[in-house]
Image 1 (cartoon, rainbow, N blue to C red):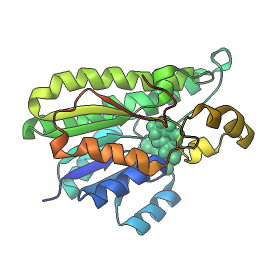
Image 2: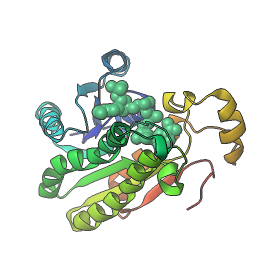
Image 3: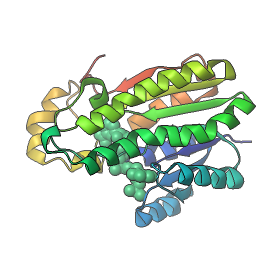
Length: 241
Ligand code: NDP
């Protein structure tokens, strides 16, 4: 039977590309989303992938959502923590709300989701947990103290949980994308994109969501079992950590 993969924020942007690539690789895929029903329903109709709505920042909602997915599709063997938001602003102007919203969706979500699948994975002696961080969690980015902190936290979480579960057949890895041409990046004013961002990327272009999806499919594979606690950077050469 096909393994089940659950992708948070799997209905739009990078997450949608990940959901589709995992489906193409033979997984039964569940794509969760936060609130954009229209995008989710369009994604479901176009791709034949089951969609589920809950807030990844809410522990009980994650628990209930995962129980629903597992009841309908089977145990989750691959978890992709992809959902994320930005609320940019320099620290001296940042509101408590914008700090907390970014920490909740980008970092609390890793605990909320992983905590609710890890016991099942340990019981089955198999699992793949892949979390989407960011180049800005590796190098820091002005105007993104909240986002850079949350995305840096992904690496610590990944390494700790990788060590705890290595003997249980569970790998835990991070993917760190550079600038990818999704709505999140296209929202950056064109002049800033052309003068401040593209000149920093040696390959001279934004990445494609499918290029991040390839990284996830690779790390999710059964024969990638020796790779754990790792970060796979895909950033066009912009940052070589
Ligand atoms: P998008 O804004 O295109 O999509 C975000 C997805 O996350 C949507 O499906 C959205 O659901 C979901 N989501 C947002 N908040 C919540 C929530 N509270 N609960 C559940 N789901 C939620 O983002 P991208 O595709 O651009 O980014 C995907 C990931 O990649 C993020 O973690 C981002 O930080 C990271 N990343 C992106 C880069 C880029 O260049 N785009 C670069 C580096 C990292 P809904 O549709 O309902 O809003």
